[in-house]
Length: 254
Image 1 (cartoon, one colour):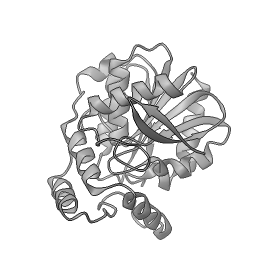
Image 2 (cartoon, helix red, strand yellow):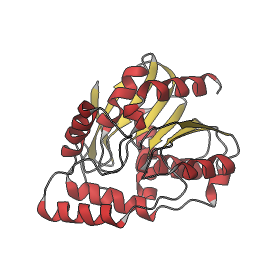
Image 3 (spheres, rainbow, N blue to C red):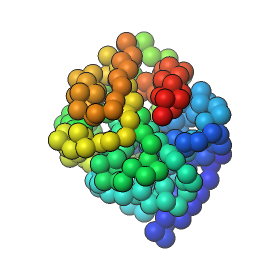
Image 4 (cartoon, one colour):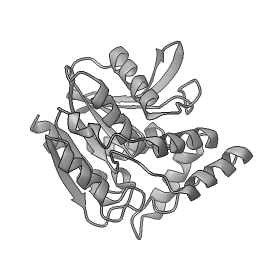
């Protein structure tokens, strides 16, 4: 169910699915929106889930947020307004950086865990991606899936689905997202995360290689690591059933 709220005087759109607590608060990646979690939600029936649109896309008003710290502050305000009881932050790519920032800066009272998908304590964006989005933003041309997003032999229907998701995000917003990702660095502070963390990586992820996840696992004290053989960057969509199973197992151990 797509819902809406008002945060700091601006409308915010999000998808909410009812279920058992703790609530999964799902944060999308660069140039994405809440639809990037549609397939995962379909596999998480019975679990309370929310996927929120960051400002500057779909029904979330305001300019896109230019830093991960600003995104994490937005998530904190959203949680205060819309989430009752305990919650776990699920973050994909830039959303994973936002989840890390949120955990580093938020007292672990209601926050019970993190699920970090295809992300790292520092994110470096290839200059070609930044240049591409600069060109798209200047021309207003909708973005297409970035090379390296998918595993080899990816389903064509999934690629078309991703094109539609990206089309709904303004290219200038995508550029702001990618720039924020490129500036993110919490390599030293991840050791301060005290809540449990599930870290998932794909061996065929060209954007956030497996070593990023291995670093997180080595430095987040209460973490577990799952590596999906052959999975690309968009494994929350491509391998939704496996990711959902891992999240269910993680929740059962909290």
